[in-house]
Amino acid sequence: MNADVKDYVVEKVNELMNAHSCCAEAKEAAKNWLEALGTDKEAEAAKNLIAEVEEDIMPIDGLIAFAGSEAGAQVFGEEKAKSVLAHAQEIKASGAMYCDCPACAACEAILEKKDEIL
Image (tube, rainbow, N blue to C red; front, side, top):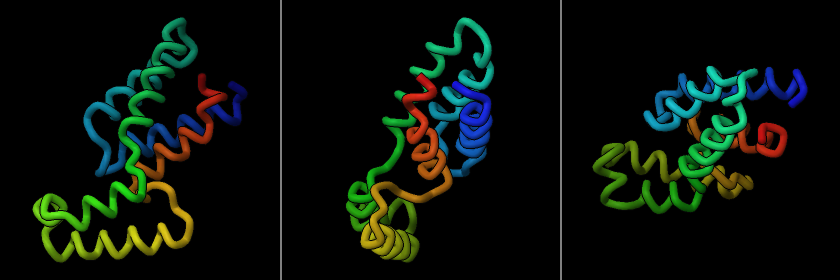
């Protein structure tokens, strides 16, 4: 991975770790990858990071379904769920494939560099 890609991915991995919407498993995978950079453990940590990011990123249709469900109303609160649903429908109409929360946005950016990371 060239220096520009590395710097970009490090920035996005840090954004992921600092996102309020990032789960504990993704934070751990991100931390492990950062710690493994430049070591013989980097390749394995990269595989783990990519696997976690692929698992965690929320497809826009999944967000729409969740935000419009009873479970979504319980998690977000009824009014916030309606707002999330409207926003998700709006960004889908604009071509978004994934949720645009800070964690998912970072995941999407990381996945754009997947081939270079692995």
